[in-house]
Image (cartoon, rainbow, N blue to C red; front, side, top):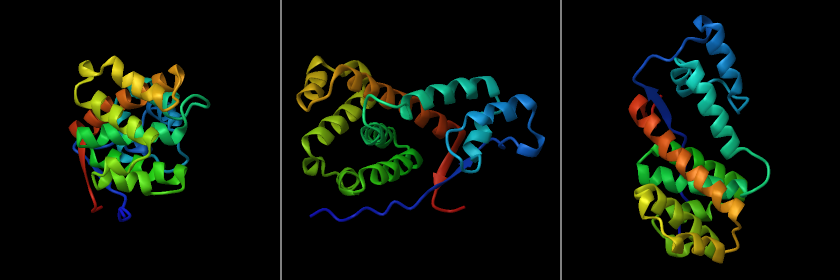
Length: 188
């Protein structure tokens, strides 16, 4: 039996001073309205919004990939994001998307298997998604037709596969942004 994983939230520390909301320009304030959550505006968002135009484009794309209705199940998108984040060494994103997967799946079994490097304990569909996320994240050009065939073999259709590719790919980018702009740890 695989033990449950402890997914304590991490805190992200920026290297560049985040925009002070009280001193933000009208363009920066407008850009921050596209943030998908109703939570406080994070330091990460306030760091990215130094360039409001690129932040708006990035967040619109992110929202369309991760929060769109239909297509690939949201938990599967989160598993793809988790797999990419693990490969890319982005602890912050790995924890965030592991926690979201646990919430959506109402179980920590998949996430525990991932964190304890027990891919053999995953069901067929989760294993295929996780394997593909890792494969695409390590060296995208080495993904093969057999990788797509493995996803189809577990019941995924072309739309779901495209959705998964988008989720994995955007985390290749998101993880790199987080690494360059700051670091994560357990301490505030």
